[in-house]
Image (cartoon, rainbow, N blue to C red; front, top):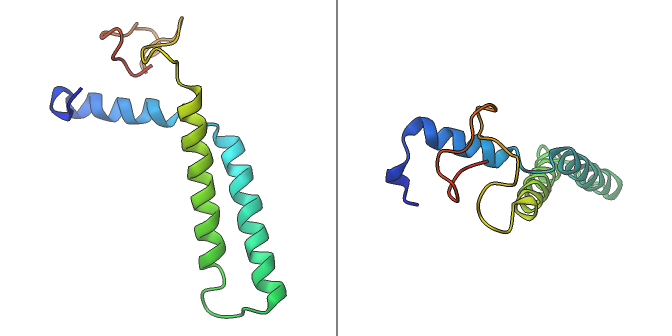
Amino acid sequence: MGHGELSGRESRQVAVAAATLGPWRTATAVGAVVGGAALAVDVVTGHWSMDILAGPVGLALFFFFLVGTVGGRLRRPATGGCAVGRTSTRGSRRCRRPGRCWC
């Protein structure tokens, strides 16, 4: 499916639907643990500078999005279409494009 086949509204709906698939609570926990551990290592080793938070925050965000994205990709149905019983992002409507929807 090319980008030109979707309107701007549909494109936003696809992006939101794809983002909701990830295990975001787990990703938040992993990001917090990694960021906290990196900050603790910086504090204990004495790497005091103006950017003491930049490294840990960067690592926390990296692992947050890594876990969320990989988890979301693993949860998708193997057929590439909608999972049985799932509806479109509107909630009440069924997918208009079977096999190519964003459920």
